[in-house]
Length: 180
Image (cartoon, rainbow, N blue to C red; front, side, top):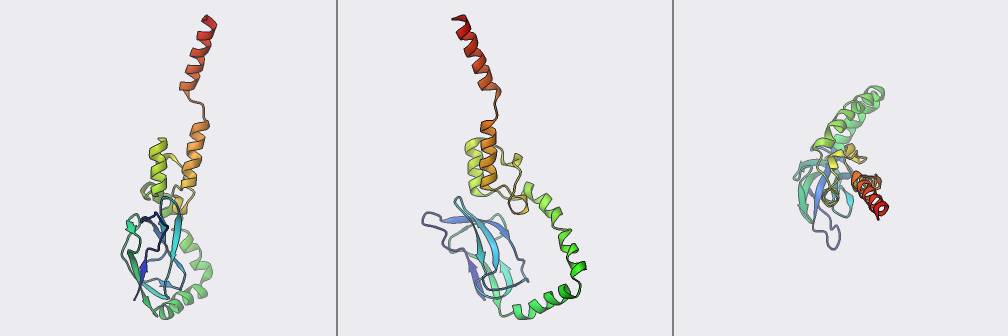
């Protein structure tokens, strides 16, 4: 069994949040195929499969915070050769039928995910510092998740919109200079 571990993420980064698993237990994986997305304050990375085989176990679920070097899951090596033809053959015999079926369920979970999807630490930090509610920001990331870029754009839009407070202050200033 090959272990999937959190890679070294940088000098000052000690933990990451599981963004999304691309595979489920029992799925065949190839060497260097992306398995899971990790999010930190500084970067979002995909962790590749260390070996070919079948994803046997997932130790950390979506949204979990994991330390550098922690075990994310395990791959049963050599089993992909048996599992891959089984998944390829049905897909090859019925591509028109198989293609619409997977596409149909995907939009529904994507629409349901944003409300329950965990926010990246960088997004939570920006929301706390700026006062902009991350739930009100339209996400452009995987499954409609709010990315750091989405949050920065929302903060910029909020800052560029005129607010009643500055207008009132400006009116007060005009009234003061008209009297004086």
